[in-house]
Length: 137
Image (cartoon, rainbow, N blue to C red):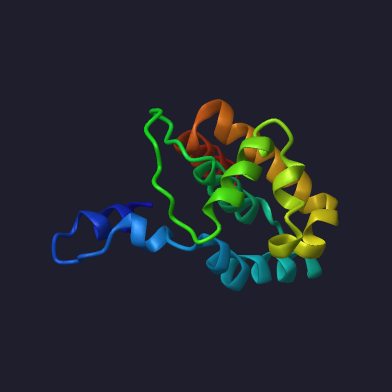
């Protein structure tokens, strides 16, 4: 977290969190979901990875924790936002997006971890969820 804070505070690096987060629907499927599948295959923890997905789902809902609007940031934004709003009360809805999660929706281990972290993110905020994860790791 400190490394990320330093990177974005460095005026020599002209990158934005918005650019880094752009097109999450392809980045998650290409980079994070394969790691989740690998972890499940070897019975490794998926808690941190589930937290990443929960934070992405929270972001796709379209508002920041202070209530300000997040501008569309994905070619599939409208569909992601609709499902993210449903997932707030029914987290499994997020995992039922078969075009992203495929068979991961049927993994009880991953689904339970995702459900837990999404509820923590919604109830206590992203920063608190990250802190809880760090303390539990």
